[in-house]
Image (cartoon, rainbow, N blue to C red; front, side):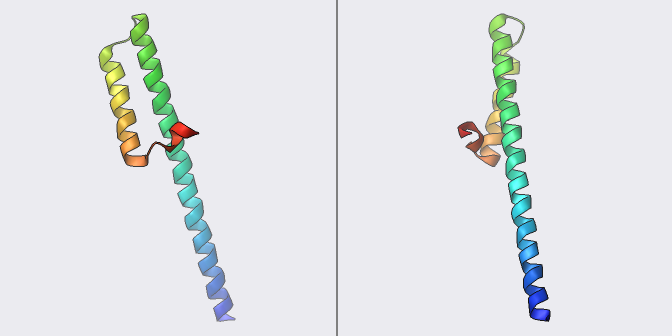
Length: 77
């Protein structure tokens, strides 16, 4: 009986770990998408004359930092 419970506990732990990894992945994708939208909005505002090159550069740097930390998988979605 103890062997069965140990295996069940291990399987449950594996499931929790996989669930957390998937959640982290989805959150990183959403954050990347949001940063990409911010970059687009900053660029558009700059081109229309209501934004600044500094804001566009900051948005680009934030996006590049996110890509360096989490990869660029969200760009392919």
